[in-house]
Length: 290
Image (cartoon, rainbow, N blue to C red; front, side, top):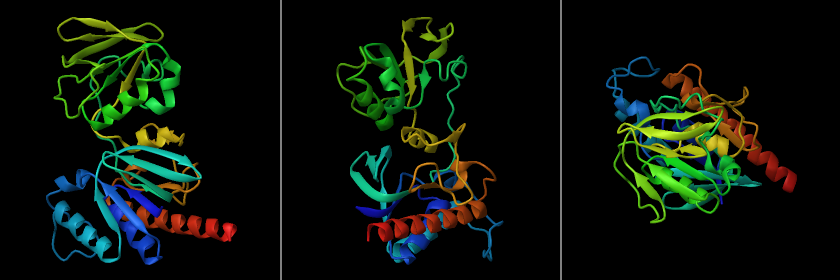
């Protein structure tokens, strides 16, 4: 059992780790890449820089700093998160538990450009198999995606649905899907239906009828992970209070994933606030137990 797991290894997550490590809490950071900051060629509007630095170099320095203070860094993809007194984090390669979790995965910048998808959100289009799979018992459903996150959602839905069809929307497969799953690689043209989604039309004019469509492109975004726990969200942003606390005890969020001003300096400050709240939460929890 870890004290704190931080999901995301950008400036908010690394900043949070500095505080939790210095407070004597065992801290694990899980990150797959450096996100949007990796693409920043020159950064000069950040305190303490005598010369501009690249986003890559700034993150690399932060990672070494966190490691020096005792943080464990795991390069992995988070697929699921659940909560029952403590948190369970499922990644592509392992399962970890923690007393507290800080989500700092940045903002979701991927959006499917498929006609009709926004019209049917909440009307057959879902972003969380754990949350909404129950409503599609013994029905024909589809999952849009091609990687490990899509595989995770497919496996959640297979015991529930009558059938699950994977739609890669033209992308190459990046995971091994069960043989019972039909796979269609043809790009999607649009979703159709009435008050609820009824099916999918492809660019070759072929169609399939489904009762539900689950979106699982790329990796799980912050809001996707939050929704699995019943966390309040504002669109694609996680809702937090002034202490970076969500509505789930022990779960905090910071950085671009909570919306607002998306700047490194802001993310670093929010990461610090989230970590201080996590430290306070764990200490109070242990005080109550003691």
